[in-house]
Length: 235
Image (cartoon, rainbow, N blue to C red; front, side, top):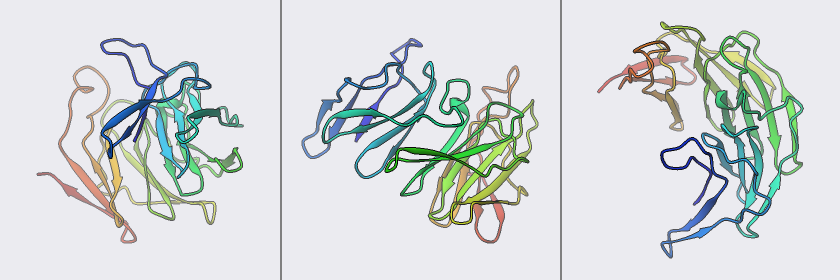
């Protein structure tokens, strides 16, 4: 298990250090900092390709766009994105998934801006802009990978009450399909996972504004394909 970045205890300073953990020996080995991103980051996304750890986004000065190989203990910067991602101004609004070949990144420049999509191939070290759904504007998008499609879900920008939006992207066809929002949760800062048959969305905040940003909800829903509907759940 590779851990990298984060913030110092009790302070806002992001770090650019990490370590590898070996469960067989119950031991930690620090990762090299030579060639590592100069700016540390937190809230960044990490993906394992089978050989390298890909790091994208985060709240560092410019966002992170790099890879780490644990065998050689070396860092390499990824190619620059044609859309300017990742940058700190948008890196907190990213939903990304590893498809087995590429990293799909769906991101917004902030509340009210349309969602944009691009992919990164670690084999060719190449970013590509993909078809984007002009009708989707998220505060903070969430996503899951089904094995063939990326489902992106989020809530509208602005004060509560929010409205939910969702769509599916197919890399095979390069197209988006809007999916039902009937019964979808309308909370911000939720968590989403894919079970193999369903997307489960859990928890979140009521909205922005005094008193709402700390209102955490223990509720959730699950979205099932291909029936295209949600189930509401609360323990």
